[in-house]
Length: 328
Image 1 (tube, one colour):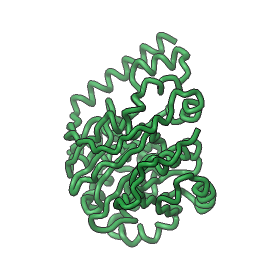
Image 2: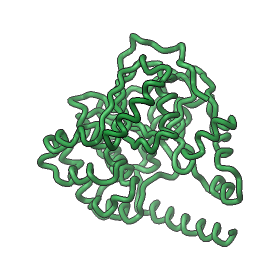
Image 3: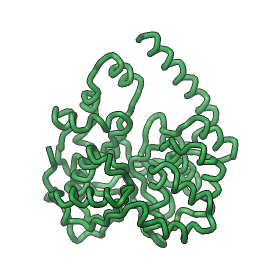
Image 4: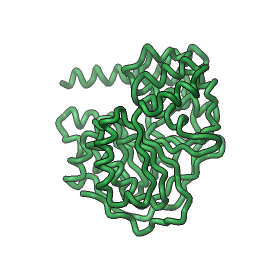
């Protein structure tokens, strides 16, 4: 099931600068994201897609040619290597930031939009596991702050890295979700970013994509901004009930039936739910409702994440894992 291009598209609107950094291995769900994004956006997009290798660029180019609404937007394709020389030049005096870019591929969601931007240009950074069920507009990108999606509790992992951030005196925002991030290039100080990734000693954590969330969380507390409206910009919550239901045998894609699709601009089908996306569309658990969701929504202020709250959450997670183990 593919979305029809929205008739609410306004070709005269200002182009929005959008970035997706991903691997072609993600195409089973990234294709759904790109089909919905390009068909349902009521604004023209300058869409920058960065994949891992030149072979993936070729694969992605073939897919882009199939997009029903692709000609509404400017779409540029890069592989990570295309930006290596630019990174070496721009980050010449920032060795920790260069190492960060060379770590987990997801971390390039922070560095590579910066490499392709100047001055106060906006950067709307998207995960590839997003679903766009309705005609929509992105919210205005803050002039100085950061806009992030909201989730409970948060995706700040691994625990050792969170403790390292606390020990280094790096303030963190709670409830961050990294499905969508909106910020202007000049709101991010590369020297500050160098200090954060250096303090986190990110080389220890190259297996953990979630370090990206820690950096966004720190940036949120550094420059302000707020959470995107959690109904319009919806994050699939892997809460206690869903974990227990799936552990008891409920097909995972059925948990997506609980999402308020007609009210959403975007659904972040995060974690394991992204692997259920195609079956959810096939079964009707997810669907394109094609409602008009162009109206803007307000940001909510960021909530600080404290060491006390972190400690409580770790105790709760350990208790819940023991409970599931006993139930099994």
